[in-house]
Image 1 (cartoon, rainbow, N blue to C red):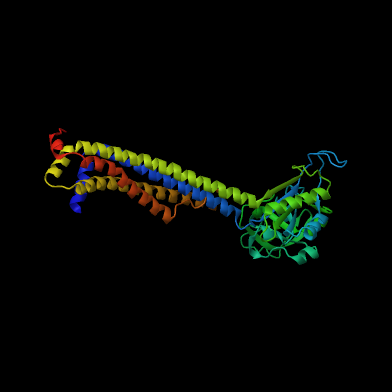
Image 2: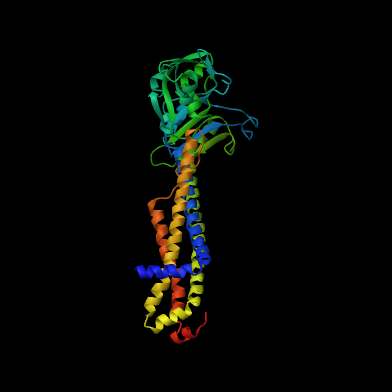
Length: 420
């Protein structure tokens, strides 16, 4: 075994530059395959984690200006959802599981929140408890809004973590304290931590959440509803339910059935399907490009082995003359090829994983400093790494097989007559 290893090294050392350049082609192929596969996986993880635990069978709706005249109403009409729309959907569309209305305090601009000598500008939102069933969150302190808050129109609020950072010192407990929001005092009952990046009208950690009914009365919103989050019943497609709900809303508000602009909407189910298609395409492209690059390196190895066989024609002739069997000759050539591709591939695999780990550390550091990161935990799993090594070994064997067959076709007497 040691003798065979020394023979392989001796053969490759005869032309170091040629051996290095050949090995580099294989190194670069496996290196790029690992980098692209890791980056694709990181992008998939980042986007998937960004969506978090949001209900897959959900969709969101909001109002926009009409684009067509209808039943005496002009084009470009402004309109709003109302409380009756919510009740209608709950009672007349059984395919709907959850309806969660939301209000936005967009007019509460500037420093809309005051506590003592501190003030800040935050996103003010009015919600029902059901919103947490669609876009779940964590509550490190206190609780979320509940039905009693809605029924009794309590002046309570749930605040984001950045609100706490700005309005309180580090040693202060926010639960039970009061904030003056748009001229009205509210008691803090919870601190919210988002588990998704679905930021409707502002980031969650920079927002203050009030009971929907309280906000409607306190700021004279009347019967208006700015947005609805809806989930489909178990086993039903969110897309089909979405069409039915939008059709019913258009009919109630006398909007043209073919007016596609009047109701703005986003379907999470469709988004997930698009993500799945995108990531599938990225994975396929990654393997096509990576294996293609690797194949180019392997072909280079095969070509170089053919050159080496030609240069060693006389040596091979001597081996055949003293009794070396074709099997021994083939094993020698294939061993050299497999050795070259395996060593080069191993270093490509090592440096690819090393670079991904460095990138991961940098991304984690940036995320801790508050940066929005779309790539998370780039890397390759053990299955991919092992598969790459197996591909290398098999490719090395194939790369050496053709030159090996060429070697055994040389007649000993012709080989001995060949001049190097």
